[in-house]
Image (cartoon, rainbow, N blue to C red):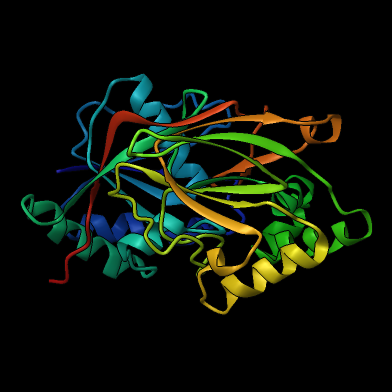
Length: 302
């Protein structure tokens, strides 16, 4: 069995020693390991003869690997060792953070093709796949403003610090959305911030859309009709307390299979968007479900 182990050297928590431990753990389970690395331009090799692709990194690294596999028309089972700053997909699928445990459980799962696979329909923004989330709003601006060196030192807390820095100049954004539901109806809505949720978790342990899951054939849109300072922090507090944010009078939650977005003013046209924890170079116009499937190899205890 050949495992291609792809790592993300730009990850805020990248640790070469842990990568080596993970590689040796797979080899101890009888696998041949080939190393690869993500590149920012997305041009890296997926070995066509490998049996399993293992991404050591976060959701952003996973997104790059998925996009590369689609371009190369390669279909292989994937797994994710949670070595990134935020690991939403790994959290939902229950992957261990301990290299030896992770390798043993993945190898056991790989052999059990009947029960240890999850087929996840893939969503995209303007044709580019994402695996967990897309968002626009105050936290999207924080992702764009964060200091990479600070992220390297303190991880996800760098985003919180960037958000605090926004308090002095709070972004007042306005977007027009056309939300097509799985039932075929389309709703036209205005909002000051919105979140597209494909994986269950957001920003760590938070859950914005309780019904969201990777295996679903639709995603969820959480939108804030108002996103002033006090509205946003009420929203964040609701989520942090484990409550459904849709209970707030200025928050709506809808299942969605296609969304189109138009910024309503100049400030909104300049607003940053994030996908899977990384800033998007250009604002997306369309977010939709695709006919592509990502197959994850699930961990199984020995």
